[in-house]
Image (cartoon, rainbow, N blue to C red):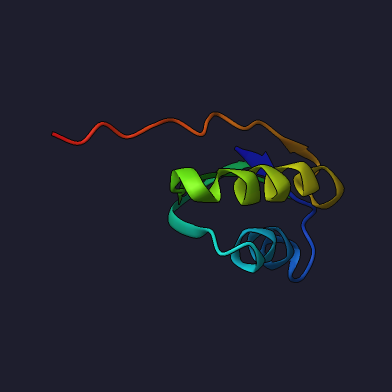
Length: 79
């Protein structure tokens, strides 16, 4: 979950952090908070080998977002 300034390409700059690390975004949901604020909920597909890259991208979120909250990564159990 994160929010960005209401400015051109703000969301693109955040998502590019993950794309540059080879992390695939599988879901994005927009929550309209008020006239100029939006929160984004995202899901990323991350293999065990990609966890260090995911962690590096999430560490860089601080410089690109107004606020952020990261849940995970969580392992997927396959049957």
